[in-house]
Length: 219
Image (cartoon, one colour):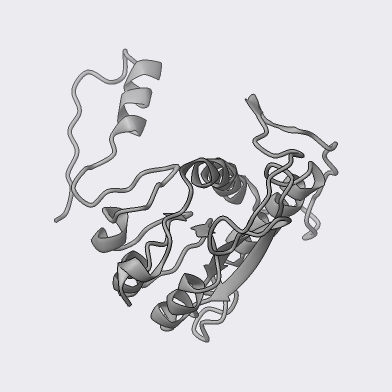
């Protein structure tokens, strides 16, 4: 599958969808329900909002026109997302990510979409072992991947890079994807760096308790 077969995604559109993607991934992290003492799930209905915390929403009406790239029409932008929910050994694996993506797509579309285009989400269940197959499908169907998370993501990279498919995943597993091109993580997890931000925050919050510290990383 040659790279020249696919058109390059417009930069402005990629950046806008990527910002929605970043918000979506944060929603995934915050989207799990918590059970109350009676065994049920406590839920509260949040008021409609056009901001995401302190960030202005990137969604809204507009007058975008034209089928400017794969997955883009006058009226819609199709993005891909997915999980491993169909894996028989762990049914429903990471389905919370996809639930959050559906909610974020609705949240954005209720505000008018992206520059007037409605966001259409196409769901892919890799069931762990089928990631190469679903990536092959996505390569011919969507503008970019947003909020997906597949356990064997190393198996997808030759296909994804070959079709120039940008991605903003919920998480990465393999070095091939974690350090791959055309990929942005809201919470970076590169294979050749160890994230120590939490240690610095802890030391800043508790300076009297933290005098000397060390960390070990298994390679």
